[in-house]
Length: 110
Image (cartoon, rainbow, N blue to C red; front, side, top):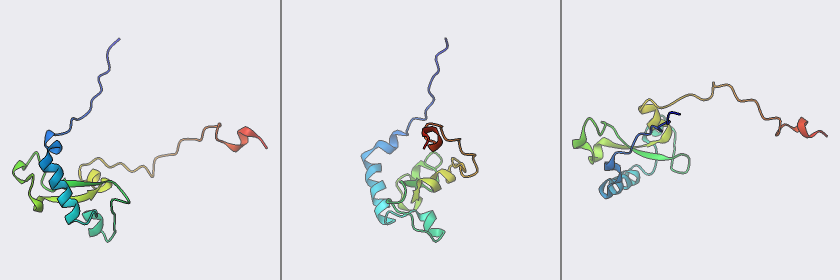
């Protein structure tokens, strides 16, 4: 039987450095823990609403020289970060799975 290898993208070691963690915290504080894209849309999304990420405006792989530059960093909510990187899928139009009969009231009777 063939072995199924799990394919996962490994995190860039840069994101594990003390310097990045410190810079990330500085940017979150600078942006008042608010998604900057939501803010541009007239909404307020904070760390209490969604996971916040610090995003490189010009990608790290393309411009490593700007990796720690404040002007190249912004706070984004998980949703906007995924949209920016093409990882956003609309689940609203996806058909719902039928409920299991085990949780259907009719299963238990009256």
